[in-house]
Length: 282
View 1 (tube, rainbow, N blue to C red):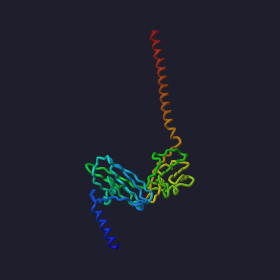
View 2 (tube, one colour):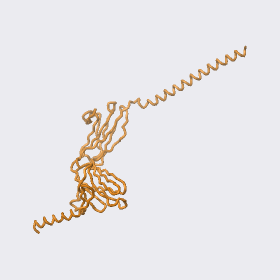
View 3 (cartoon, helix red, strand yellow):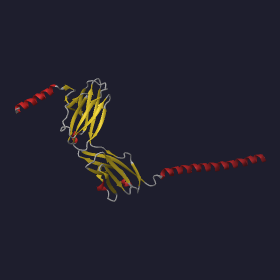
View 4 (cartoon, rainbow, N blue to C red):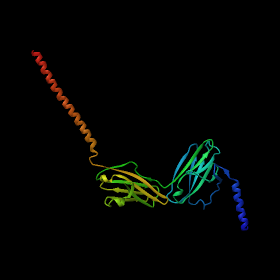
């Protein structure tokens, strides 16, 4: 076969594929999804949402550049028949999708943070349902409630993530800015430990009122950074005694009132008895 014949064969093949296109919503080109070869499927992770009658969402954590295939599938028991399908990234329509029976897919090459975001498959017939994939940097896990401790004690903050980050950094809120812990605190005041690749731990010793405030844990990934917020409250040693002191004061006031009332009642009783005796003598 000559080079010209080979080129003509490719043109004919493309022409046949275009002739088989189906309309699936505005600005959407749908083509039959052929079985992927081993080479093309290498390093492509698949994520699927199966829809029955309600819209669904799925979070997908991506620590590093990769290829993902997002599959929107209509359950065979769904009442939504022959829907028009549109894929969008945010509010922007994505013009190319791939289709099998009751299943629509797109492949996204995530090379930097600009490819992160929400990808939505919109199925519309007599009603509309959606499947939304949120591509994002891995989230951090930690204690969400305020950390409450006392002066002189130590505070411990722990950050965890599903994936190993490139680096960890701890910050303290300094006015409106975030200041790295190692630049504002002395080394004898804090210690940062890394028990495992995806866990980081901050310890602050000999707490004072000046240590209270908001702290941040940051994990750096190839596709971006993820932050976790911690709030530290430092109480004085007398703080736990305040409710007890208030109760004691209330009890003391009550007891004093009762004693004074009894003394007053006794005096009044004695005075009344004397008057009664004087009346009898008369």
